Image 1 (cartoon, one colour):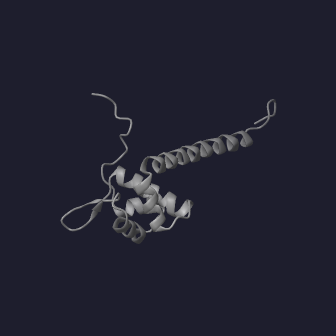
Image 2: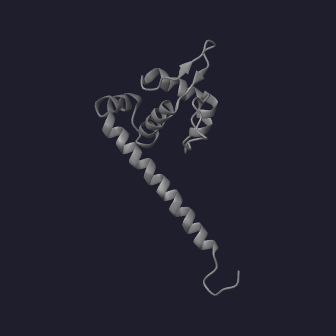
Image 3: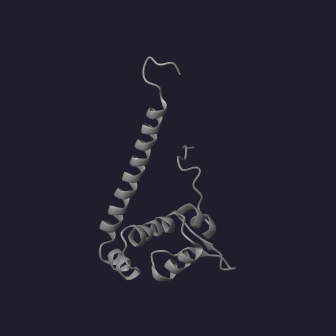
Length: 121
């Protein structure tokens, strides 16, 4: 049996988990679900939403377009409809650059906390 590197990933997430994970209000998630057909969480018999990792990636993309790029909902819809590959690719690059920046900042903080060579700890 092969080792699963994504062992901690869940199959489904609740709206509260997604809201906390992405720091987006529940109401905004529900609104975006109505506005963007790409965000389509499964609902159980009681109407409780279950978001997949693909839904979360689409929410991140919408959040990037609306909050970071300052596009309107209509502009974000148009961008996602006309250039889905380019839009997704750009978002992926931005996410990777953010992760690299966080890692570099952590290294810098660690270096700042380390005394110079030859100095006592």
